[in-house]
Amino acid sequence: MITAAQMRAARALLGMDQRRLAELSGLSLPTIQRMEASEGVIRGNVDSLMKLVAALDAAGVQLIAEGAVSPGGGRGVRLKG
Image 1 (cartoon, rainbow, N blue to C red):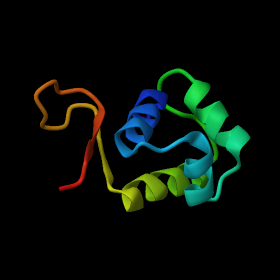
Image 2 (image 1 turned 90 degrees about the horizontal axis):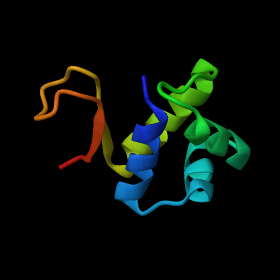
Image 3 (image 1 turned 135 degrees about the vertical axis):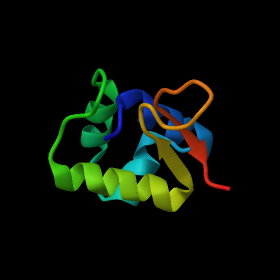
């Protein structure tokens, strides 16, 4: 669904800190920190992951899935345009 690297990259694109992402997603700061510290695909309860993805989407970030049509063919993020 979303990797820790995508999560960090999305925040960087938005110029957002972890505290702000926690506020926007309705998740706790320790949960956001734990998610970002993980390796690979973030594991967690589905509700938390959906809140995270929805918050990033509402902030203007599009997640790019593995194998999607993109120059590198790998996972990534981009601003909606």
